[in-house]
Image 1 (cartoon, rainbow, N blue to C red):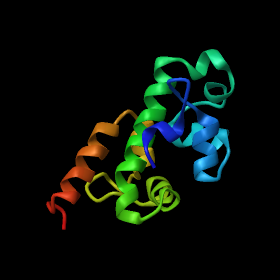
Image 2 (tube, rainbow, N blue to C red):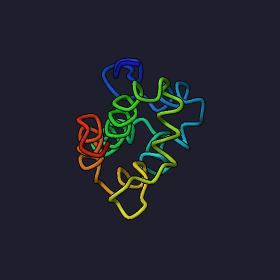
Image 3 (spheres, rainbow, N blue to C red):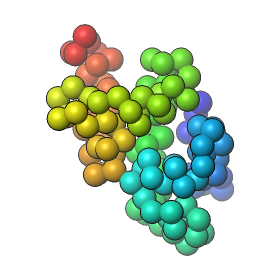
Image 4 (cartoon, rainbow, N blue to C red):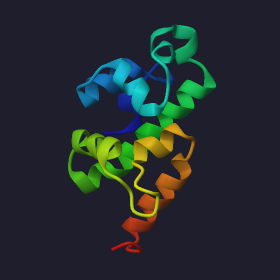
Length: 116
């Protein structure tokens, strides 16, 4: 899946993300560390914080999709698999606290064979 499949009119669209991951917009918000209003109110969907968090979540999931063979499995990994070296936190927990860049660096390191 490409990033454009999650977008609508130049913005990441919570409803499209939810449809792709077979979940609800509210769950997408929670997975990105956002409140329910952030994905329900049009002015909040357009906010920099909402778009940044959605982008970070999608970047992590799309970067790991080839490894897992499916975006659904990559999303499940994002939500539930503790990452070594991060005190048992999942990628989702790290993204929720603003540490998405660390998750992306970890994925790059694993892909390069550093943590093989």
